[in-house]
Image (cartoon, rainbow, N blue to C red; front, side, top):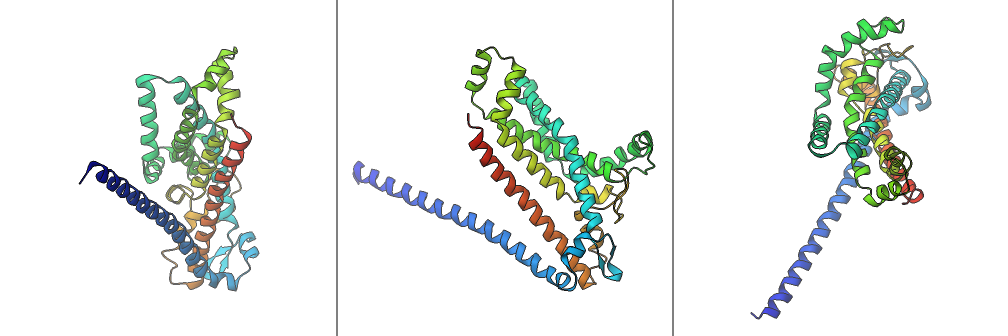
Length: 307
């Protein structure tokens, strides 16, 4: 076979491989969409019994949760979930932002490598480990020292404790995404700002954070979604009381922990099972909306904050 024929054969083979790879990637994308749709449809189907028996508005606004009496009020779990998510993000976002700025713009050499690697390790630790450590350390500390400072009586478990631990869980995740956004910026932005007399802090504040804003906001929204759907930490630390919390130190319930605490023992009750599956449907929809919102916000800010 001549060299020219071999060249033609190689080009045809590469084209076929490239075409086949495209088919596989397309199939994988459609499979992911189909799997998500299948999960949602299954949850909707299993939720139909409780939705056909009770008003959706009534279930979302009622504070009465008593499956034995067919009372399915999700309001306490919804309020507890929102409290935990808002408090956790209020504590975690400033720490994540400051840590990411330090890693991306101030740390250098081996120190940067060490700090970044520890953040990655923290992000990879299973959340159940954080929950177990919190039971040993955070719960006694909150009950004995933090709650009394605010004039509250607490055994240590409750909304505040879950929020603190979830802030620790989600902060490394947000740090990693924020660092990636800052390091992806071209060096010309830094050099141009410094070249006109701006200090490093002014460059970070007015130039880099603005340019990396889409990625940072996406990290925050994705972190919020992750806190909203957290299961094991709230199940261990929230207290398991289906009541509207009257303070941040009160015990309560979240939507994921409601499923964990009640699903096993109440599976024999069809309506209760359907109600808990409906909780799962709400979680899927809310987390999907957060992810979709993060993507849309990133695109909009990218167009608005072009550099």
